[in-house]
Length: 281
Image (cartoon, rainbow, N blue to C red; front, top):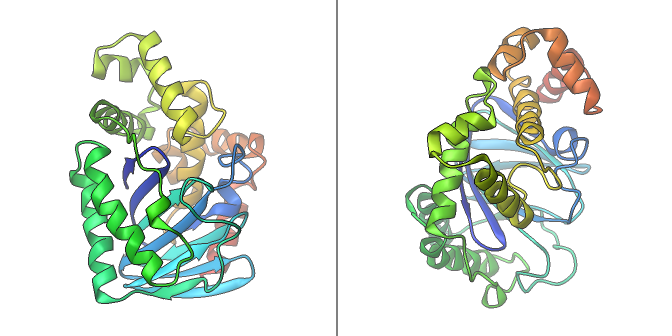
């Protein structure tokens, strides 16, 4: 997963291989979106996926965009997919009211080219400023396809700084090593800055973007949220077992993983696996 930030937008490029991303079982119980509602559009760059939005089942393939309306949660299973996700805060994008149907939009070749350009920019841009032009082009393309937004009203300035982008890159580099149970001291060592500075920078980015779960104030809590979200996705893979997933996300045993799921109000890992595989079938 690659991420890029502007003031109001979170842009992700996500690759999935026989995995299930279930917003209902992750974001809501873990309270990752409790501070304010977000709008969400996913563009399928390559591959295909089956998406359940509320009671609606949407099959999407390369060149499709699916829209998650405000307040809705979704589950998406990608057998072999590469997608671009764009989230933003209502009121900062010039749109009013709830996003309207349809849930799926078939993009033109020109619009698809704009989406690929934005996806590439998330990996290549050294700062938020470099994302403004490709993001504006992508938003204009979405509006031309019937997504009810007004890109001319999007507030994209000031974007995240070059230093913020570098910090996010280093933060991701440390936190994804879940099997080693990364600690804040690992980030201190890598960046060669004080704990006080790290805590302040994480709090600042989290307040504006919710990078590790809104209202999370400590590194350990943010890391554990990331563990649970990652574990819930891994458990949907047909070859995954609770024991293997526990080791991959840094828990010493299945019992420790069970306890973490229970504290978060989630089903047990075994029940989670059964449910997601039943969905896949």
